Image (tube, rainbow, N blue to C red; front, side, top):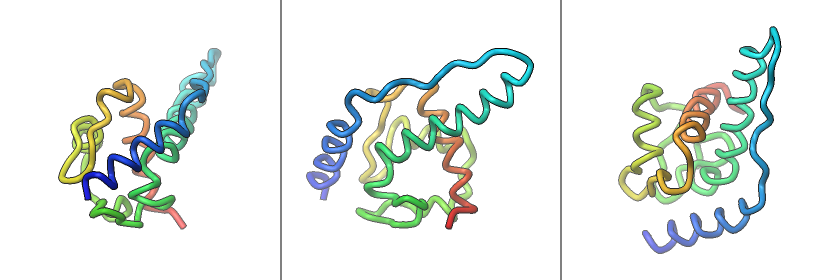
Length: 115
C-alpha cells in the first residue's frame, strides 16, 4: 500500500517538474488579486499532488484518503496534515514551501462546494 502511494507521489513529481511559479501583483486591488492568486496557486498544487488520492473534488478516497468535502479540520490542522502527513499520506514539507502548503490548505476549503 505504501509502495503504491510512493509511486503515485513520484509520478506526480515527475509530471510537476518544470512548472512556473505564481505571478506577483501590485496596486489597489492587490489584496483581492493576491487572495485569488493564493487560491489559484493552491488549486494548481492540489491538482499536481493531491488529485491522485483525494480526487478532483476531494471525495475520491483512494488509498484511505480522507474526504475533503466533509472534513471539519481548521486551516492550521490542514497545514499540519499536509506538512507532516497522516496515516498513509506522505508529508510534503520537503517538496513544498510553507506558503505553498498554506495555499493548498486554503484551497481545500473550496472543495466543500465542489461538483
